[in-house]
Image (tube, rainbow, N blue to C red):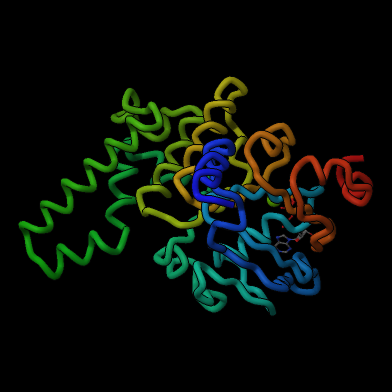
Length: 271
Ligand SMILES: Nc1ncnc2c1ncn2[C@@H]1O[C@H](COP(=O)(O)OP(=O)(O)OP(=O)(O)O)[C@@H](O)[C@H]1O
Ligand SMILES: [Mg+2]
């Protein structure tokens, strides 16, 4: 392809093709068991930078456990997990987070008793670069770092249309707003990969579309997303590729259109 055609091609699709993007997260033959129950049974898949991968399947298929094994909350008994080319299989969750792999959780009480702005600043403070400057460089640098974090937090609120709730307590927010705060907290750490377990749960129907748009913009910034989701219209709208699990195993790994027409997927989940 000549250069001008390449540019036109890029413009036509707006986004670079999958093969042009770097593999950010790779799971290889991951096995997780709880006592005798094998919850994840030899699952492999890759997620590229700027790609949103959906993880779907029936209840108990092992989706949340797979996400936990990627995030470091569940230990893989065998297999490996690679983050941006580095083997993180043996890393605990906090070390994976430091290397850019973050996961959203249900809201905590600590989160409820802080304002939206405080929630974001706290997440930014926990990010290693900020801490280091206050210890190593002294008070002035520390004040500068604090100001930078506050500015980033404010930009984040502007970006996601949340400035009007900057001073609201966590407990005053709606389900959708809380979910957004969780997502913004993740973004304050400048992640490479974000893992989301059923992000639309508790979000009012009229806000689902906004949240889908927000997640798309995060993906388009080059962040890799893995999203466990039961709502198929969200999966279709948001994801570039879908991994289907059933009884702990991966049974399909393709585009949404391909998996909905797959006989095995229909029998296991969609039928
Ligand atoms: N902490 C745990 N201890 C013991 N067994 C567990 C634990 N967590 C999950 N399991 C079991 O592992 C299997 C997979 O569960 P998992 O929660 O990963 O499924 P899921 O696909 O996320 O389901 P759902 O769609 O209902 O959220 C199930 O058989 C479940 O009972
Ligand atoms: Mg689950």
